[in-house]
Length: 388
Ligand code: ADP
Ligand code: MG
Image (cartoon, rainbow, N blue to C red; front, top):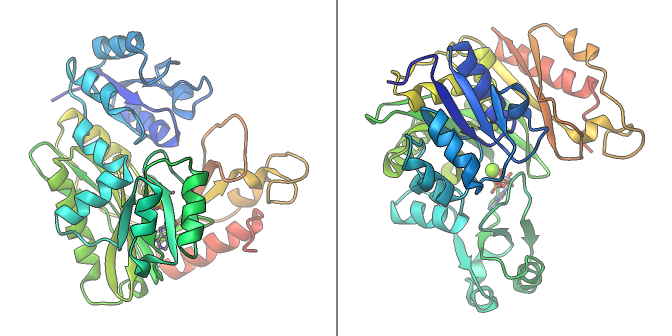
């Protein structure tokens, strides 16, 4: 067991890392963050921020020497970086698990090989692969295999010609071509798994996206998001099976589509998940505390959600006069949110707001799920988020 006042290492300095730093600090640990951005949200609150690239071996050596263990908040950390650090200190999750989650081809192949539910797809490495793809895949989404997030690196294509054009636009990068599914709902499971294989899942969340970016999470998911009896159980079972097959240690997010009452795995995130932010406010142990516990070999908490919760993401366009990214740049009027009962605002301290950039979120908690949802959606409108 790694116990305080040990120093923990975090690869990546985004908001997920920032919440990890807070959880670790509350528990008595110190945290060093590695992120090339001098203004990174986690770097700002870390005990030390190494402003360096993920393949800067001088920086990795000092992490390896000063930290008792290292984890990540960012799936695009190079596998070589994780492998290198493994020579010095425990690294969780392991490079092999992160490698599956950071490449859509490896991820889809993993699901297929393990008999886990996934949507129809084709691997695209060449124009010939597009020409050979099953006609039944269209209309489809072409997604670059690596480095996509928040809907970036994705193109919706009606037919084969559009897919070819999109593949050229992505400069021939390896891709997956996914059939466009009619989504009844999207749900996600966040869980933690320890080295002994114990798993603790949070209640399944219901997610609403806008322009490919998470907008609202309702937690726990409403019964309507589970059209067939027992679906919630199986979402957790599937997520648990994934974690087991990956030999995963840490906090894992698994995104699902619900299509005609069937669960389909969309993708996995080898880190805490945006749809688990509310676990800070609405559960007696957060996904970040679980990440610390799994990393340090402490017993996992058995988290209890004590309040209904709705989370709303605050994206960069909100900082612009028209709420869409145009006009004068100004701070949103936070007093509007602070007036809402049960609302907790979290801002990440990012330097500059760009449209689509995750700048913060708020969570509304309470006893009555319907009231919480109503309040959260009213607050979302009041701060200026519009559904065009
Ligand atoms: P990201 O890494 O950006 O989260 P996702 O693959 O999760 O990428 O896609 C983002 C969102 O786009 C999904 O949450 C979903 O709303 C929509 N989407 C992605 N793939 C499909 C699909 N095959 N069919 C329908 N909608 C999809
Ligand atoms: Mg996603």
